[in-house]
Length: 423
Image (cartoon, rainbow, N blue to C red; front, top):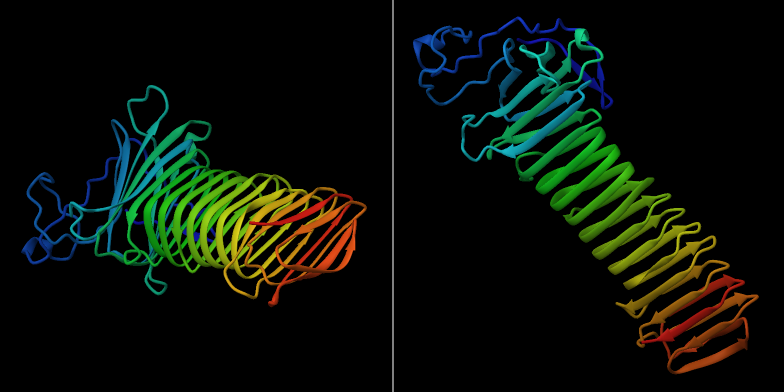
């Protein structure tokens, strides 16, 4: 069965294809040897579907079987171009994306789904199952949704996508409703150029996943990722919930967690960008050229950060951590504590820290050579660096140089002390 559906701007548009009724039983597509006489015009064949199937397999139309027991749908696609799979309106969805190591799909991309109704029902639910090919755009869009007659009923879906090892997809797009769980594992960058996942609410788990460009967005829920390898960019978005990433490599890594807790570790990137708002941010063991962090409340912990530049902007979120910097460190807070350990990876590191009402405690690498200007209006400014020559010394202001060098250290605070020591 091939019916129209489309996805635009990440959402579903209702194209109103006729539902597959529970009483209807459509024969599955019978796979045949393309070289045999039976293959003829490529139509589905009747007969014994349990007979031996010759390889290689052919792409198929959507095959839907309904009647006694769960309703099922399946389709085989060429593993090229763009494929979009969307499930909408189900009470819950369990979905998996795996590599077809067994070769059961004959080198084709397999999309299979099973649907069942909650409670005691002798027949499976009626579903809207549609598959539409846009040859000009090179995209196949597959959509599943409960039929309107099940409004108010809990219809559940299980969907599995098997990707052949030799796949060369330009894009794999997944759109899932609230109450979803998605597991993606062992997908290689060569198989999928762009992997785009959006979920209303639920959990996304990634393990050993590669893509040229990866984007995972969950409005309310959790993203857990381990050993991610994204060539150009990896983007993680959770509005409310949590983001947990352990091991990610990409040219650009972006995390947007306006109301979600964020914990990331073992990151390698040219540019790492983190945006938060209300919840805690914890990042450790990072190797990057540039790291930027922007948030409002919560706590910011940045440990084991090795970067050319680190830029942190916050309102009241305290900032602490250990940083190995080769070019610049900038921390700007409206009113928050700053506590850290600064190692210098070059002889020209520019450091600027500003806050108010909370103390600043900074331990600086003993190799620091350059000028310093530390001010704490209404409080005490203390600098204890080796080999210093002090030009201005006041209870609230200390200015001078430490040795001869091109580094600089500037700290401003209001109504709270600043203490700078060496290690």
